[in-house]
Image 1 (cartoon, rainbow, N blue to C red):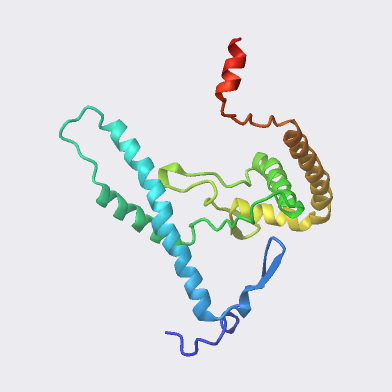
Image 2 (cartoon, one colour; image 1 turned 120 degrees about the vertical axis):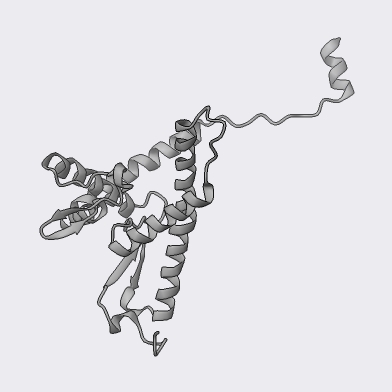
Length: 211
């Protein structure tokens, strides 16, 4: 139990500033009750939406494996419980996905992070330092971790390190790429064919077409 709901997370941990798009959020300044509420929302999403998506795939796979078996019936409730238990285990042991997407759009910063991710994969994967999915144990690529300089890191963690080290270069490259994308979008819009509006034909117009 939290004795004082007005205390903040900084009373027990130092998490620093989280930047999302053009906004900086001091995680240590968030009141505990708000932080707990946000955590619950994240857990609900994991146990609800993500499990539901996984359930569809599990069901499709099972139906293919038991195709033609008249007596077989998919245990949806049992599968859902099992998937939720697996998700809880991943949350507790730290293997749940920690990737946090940025706001949608083609901002220069987003593009810079995109370039950093691609470069990190291109340089680290050939050397064996790029986490791989483990389908056998139900670990997705974005959830996978690998030990790097004494830390267990995800693909996103590694990409962030590369971005932070070469941020100035990535931002400069992103500005060029952003201009290209904007020009491409502008040309696509200009070349788009406007839909032809249907015009109701009058009796006089119809007669004019015939004679």
